[in-house]
Amino acid sequence: MPLRAGRFHAKLVQIQGQKTALTFATAPQISWTLHRLYPLLLILDGILSNILWCCEDVCLPFIHSVLLVLCTNVLTVQDEASLARRAVQSWLGTMSCIFLLLSSVYYISSVLHELNADEPPTLEDIIVMMETVVYKLEVIREDLSEPLKMSSRELMTVLLFITPVHWLLMKYLFSSNDYLVFLVLFCCVYHSSWCQCTLRLLWRSLYVRQLLSLVCGRTRDAGGLGQMVFYAVVDPGIQVPRYNSPLEDLSSSLFSSRVRKALDGIYDPDLVSKHSSTPVSVKVVEFRIDENQRKWPLDGWTHNMLPYERPKFTASQFPDRVECTSPWEFQESLGREWCWLDDAWKPEPWLYCDTHWITRGDSDSLECYTRKRVWKRRAFQHLRTEGVL
Image 1: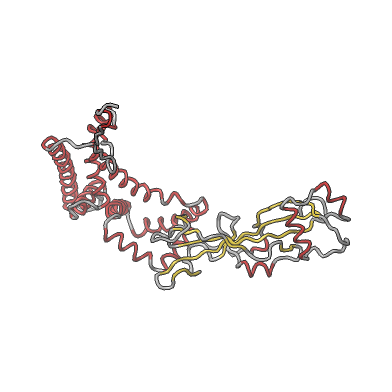
Image 2 (image 1 turned 45 degrees about the horizontal axis):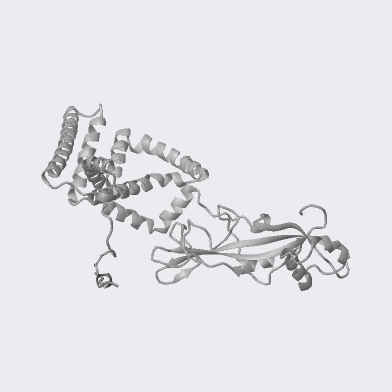
């Protein structure tokens, strides 16, 4: 064996922690398109920052809001006002429009000048800017889509309540010009920090929440659970052997065990009629009751719920969350025609949700303020005639 064959050379290769650069992983056409879109992304990001009041100069959104309201006054000059007042409003509105237009042109030209003077952005910079713009657009979209989440019933209730109130305000308190100015001003300052803090403080008031629940029609349904079918049918009519006398008590533990075996498929339905004197057809259902809890800073997880949300126990089968009693109170009020198949209620694991009852996982976290779980218990009913009672 030659001596050269036994020589080895080590080479250090650093792979861990390295990522392929976007410049090499992106097609040239896409890179060129993103580079051309970068100025538009910067301009759009500046506009969204002013709308959301998150720009570096905290006074700039306030100045723009005042100028925009003054521009609106040009369209709302009242004919019955004095000549001097109309002249002042028209002059202020016109100058505000010109100032807004000039400031917009200056901002766009300064952005383009800085891009030409500085080094061209990398693809990573463009991607970060795109993610920032998408996030800000998502915030605005959530604010605009929040009223669309109401059901048809809630929307009709809001319209029936707000329409006469709106007519009275427009008739006796506000004019159309004042209403337009107020609407523009509210849209401009909605995302400001002091406006958001004011809304949060108002939302802490119990009376405000009760008023909102009354206007939106989100009142609890006090209907009794006994008049509703809220169970899930496990088997509409299963044949269960009856080995003893026809007068056997169907609520006995022996018959319940035979029902469980029949559900598990241990009994052959073809042999039931041969080895039992009177086979019985029973309907097996599963009752489901949701238990809801909310987390409070001092008390932890309790059944104390907010007045506008779901009660502490609800029927699982209904999407509108019908209020019901606890599982242990319900079992006492169940009719005699039903016999329990399970010895006790069986709870499922807790599902942790946010404040809007949107499931976040099966473990508690900082963003979880509510939780729910389902209590299940099976029961059966003797079918004395063909079909389901």
